[in-house]
Length: 296
Image 1 (cartoon, helix red, strand yellow):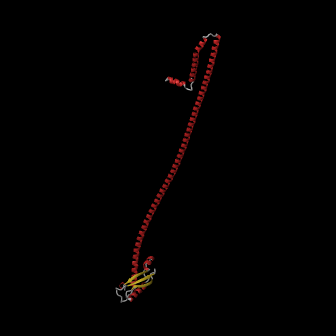
Image 2 (image 1 turned 45 degrees about the horizontal axis):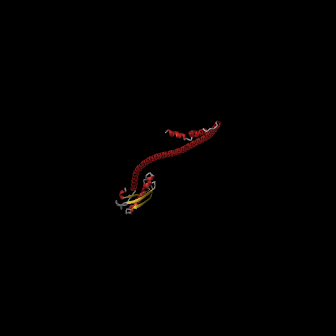
Image 3 (image 1 turned 180 degrees about the vertical axis):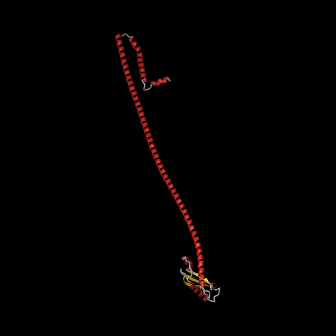
């Protein structure tokens, strides 16, 4: 497990472990090459050669190795720097990408927040508008309801006033009817009383007229008691006779003429003082006479 973690860290492009490992391996290989070549040089050194020449060769070889090492080191340093630059560029790119992502996320979040805020504001505006519409509708409904209640109250008051006026009118009509009935009854009673009085007066006047005419009547000896003469007498308010005529004769002309003569002799005849009664009963009236009614 630890080997896997170490290998993962070693192969991580963002760390310097791989470069260091490559450099160490390279140096180990170089040293190993030198170590392998040393025996050959020793075999050559075994030959008799001048000491100064051997030193010079070793010095030249060492210098070449150093140059190679420096070149390798330079290459490794260049590669390390290139790797570092690459890693730094990758890191900067990664940071830039992360920053771009963060900026994009921030912009997206800001856009979402703005959209949510705008939506909230729009919803609030719609809600306020709906509330205002509902408020206006309620106010209009309340206004209409108040107007309807006022109208109903006015109609109720008008109906009550009409009912009161009708009741008063009916009471007045009833009172007037009662008064009219009372007046009618009183009038009927008065008329009945007057009729009774007029009948009594009429009967009295008729009796007076009959008595006065009978007093002046002289019928002929040929008349019999069962004979009857009916005459119509017309008077003026002073009692004078303006006309007298036979309606039904007795069959005895002498008796009929004697009745006419008696009426004329008896004038002026008694008449009532009430002009209306005179006009009703005595302006023109009929009277029957029999010889038995005459006064001798």
